[in-house]
Image 1 (cartoon, rainbow, N blue to C red):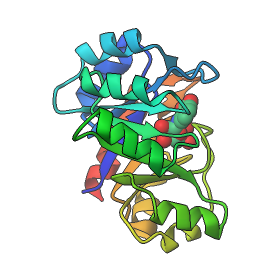
Image 2: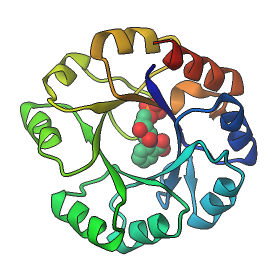
Image 3: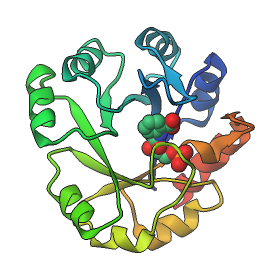
Image 4: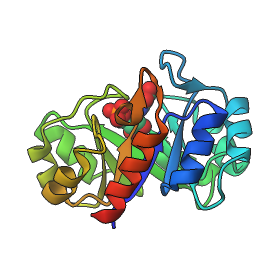
Length: 201
Ligand SMILES: O=C(O)c1ccccc1N[C@@H]1O[C@H](COP(=O)(O)O)[C@@H](O)[C@H]1O
């Protein structure tokens, strides 16, 4: 069974969809206004209140002040911080001091050997290998074979591509956003199909 995260929830109906499909995690894009999936901490708090307690909420951040991320972890709005900007190991160390026991994921866009080395050396609990920031585009999966630690696979995954991705890379987990949307909003049938596909692998 492969773990799965459904990212980019913005509406109460999105919460209902994940409560039905029951992925391992769901994600909120926090304080990143250039994303069409952006939510404020207040919106995330309200959405999180309706979430099935077995689904862990992940906050996705791009270069936000570390105090802001720590406050959201400490208040329980999110259980995991997913860092998608230029946050380095020093940032992660400070976050661990401000939010003791927190779970931190760091996203890496794999383009070169330097990116692979940075992913291997990350102080995060898990690394997430991606093409961009919710672009719906895949990257060259052959690069992932050179990462020497468990990883979450993201970037352009769809319910249909999950079996091939799992067979090729054996990721710790999968992260989907664009691939479970239709016309720019979360699609309950695609969410269910993705979770079912992950659980079958
Ligand atoms: O989805 C966004 O808008 C976003 C914004 C800023 C940082 C990350 C974002 N999304 C993350 O992108 C990957 C994969 O998305 P997709 O399936 O390719 O659309 C996922 O980790 C999201 O958390």
